[in-house]
Length: 162
Length: 282
Image (cartoon, rainbow over all chains, first blue to last red; front, side, top):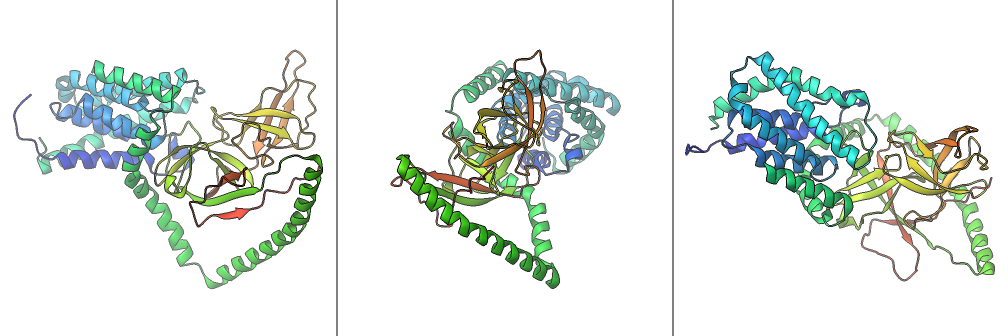
């Protein structure tokens, strides 16, 4: 824990709100299956960039909000997002040094892990196994990562979030 | 970290098994309502614009069409009144109870995508309109689903085709009772509990039986589309297609069943009373 002044909380909150908005925005059926996990991507970015501020707690809270928004079991997304935040926190020093394409691959693994955790929960409560397209969003998320990374990094620098 | 995991596991178990978390969820969903509202805006604006800029001729045409439909429905309604009176008289003779009628409220679907692997939709009316958990939801006289979560402004509806939904039904032709279970696909229901020799045919209309105590009886649910009878299996494989156009619905009717005449909840003024649907003769 460093004692640097905290600034730019609004930027973080707004970025999460936009991610959640994109999550529930109505899309045509074919695109719905490809919708990336916006909130996970944003969470990974902030955990990586500001591990002293955004971490497991924030991930858990965002997960609860996602659960409420999407009508899933309360705690399903909270569990997976908290875990993702934890893993990102553990690896943030390494991920930061990776070139972008390598980062994307790491992100793919994290996104797949989130989907896997959700799948376990769904299996436990007796929902049917989703089709193969269930695994498409992490791939889309991986392809989107460089852009999200650049946009959020520029935002962070512009508003001097620290 | 461990704390978060344990806490989410506990939350999931409680949420799955018990009803205590309903209030937490409803508070949280009231907080997130602005997000849903914002997500709905583009589509709502689109509808508004298409209505505002509709041409005069198109409006006239639509008006004429609605007028014609209204006439038709009124004609049918006349017959219904007579039938209802007759039905009441016959029931009186048999000394059996009769339901007075159902009160309905029209709600619009909010254009918000929820979990793509569950059949959930969001309505723009909530507990402030008197909607309660477990309330049946209809779409143009066919069953659509039931309310699973309510907050002040919105209600989520679980469609009958969700894999966790089961609906007590009967075959309209002969009164054969069974349960229709959702498959997770939006246009398919399954009837897994009928034996191979059950009297059911392709094209049979399935209506609610009212046995669960949650749905009023006599509303159309689905039509049987395929029956497969495997000689080795004890049960037939029966599929049915919901009568409501679940994937295209934009409005939904919320129903209050008025069973005992004394105990009706009259909280909303915008609600109208509607007659129960005509019992269709085979």
